[in-house]
Image (cartoon, rainbow, N blue to C red; front, side, top):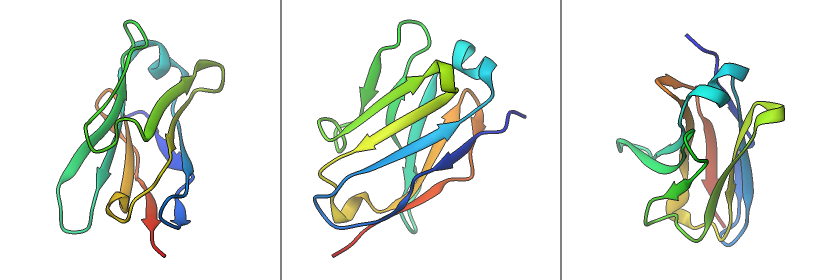
Length: 112
């Protein structure tokens, strides 16, 4: 099982920004689609954004489109999620998924 690790979570006020990072083994960046998911307390995990290995195309689901951006740096084996204009409802644990491998998550709390 590949080792995937997220970082960058924290406490931020509404309207603020955070950037999450996900480090994974090098071969994942050349072979796997990569995703960010969010899990709110008591809710199931939901898809946030993804980046395709085939052409580098990105996609974010409706609640996040226009506010969140997914990107990757192959030289650093790192996936990013830039989160802007954060809302209270963005609170949750954010997970990185590389192929079929999940990280342990990083907590994001949006609160005034």
